[in-house]
Image (cartoon, rainbow, N blue to C red; front, side, top):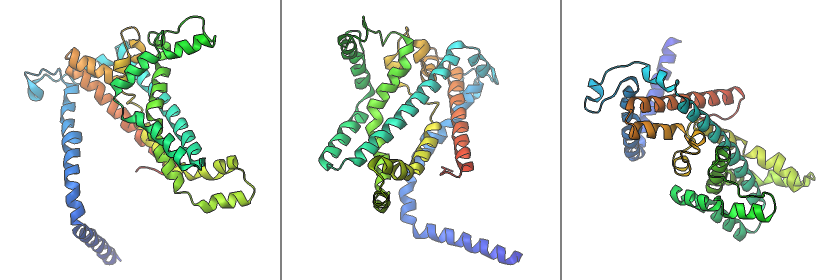
Length: 314
């Protein structure tokens, strides 16, 4: 019995190497990407040692004094770092919820459109903002949400407010503002994935539902949405893994000293302390904390999905 098992394992190993040998062209094509990932994703991890040092550029990694967990203790004693964690999570959750709901809603609406010209036009118009530079997007937002901008003029003309709302100067509006801008910029791009998933649904299911008397809304609830469930779960797991990455460019460009308690994310905190204040150990410790939490969130979401018998990444 043992010999048979060993033979089976040996045959399996031979078949694996044989398949790799048969696909040597594909293996060769993957080498540049593997080198890219190694050089830019794994090799820099050596720098994480800085998080446990009082790093001095002149001394380097090998000469800088070791301070153990002192940088982490200092971080969690700082209110601005705790605020940055709160802001990062809050804006990430807002972006996740608004982005997912609007993407699915737009995908469902476009999927129901029968006029192909109109459908393609809407798709093109909605996903073009994805390619705009964040500097341009923030500049547009600053003009639109300014005290004399289009939004305030509309609110005043409708009588909803008596005086202009200072959207850009009050922290309580910042998270919502980032969520709205992010939806406008990314909703069309995110919709593409859901539309692709909807096209893979067997048309016979819609025909059967229609024969059974289901209306358009009922077919959406019972055929279309269940058909994209696996795609939704996979994207949700991936997005949960990015909850610690609310963004940098928008928060940095749109924020100011007036709203810094609401606008500063972990990435902005790392930039301020790592580059502006040259506290490299503290900045690296903050980045390492963000990465570790992101890994925990990703594994946790994947594990929960597996226990619920849903699709998983791992």
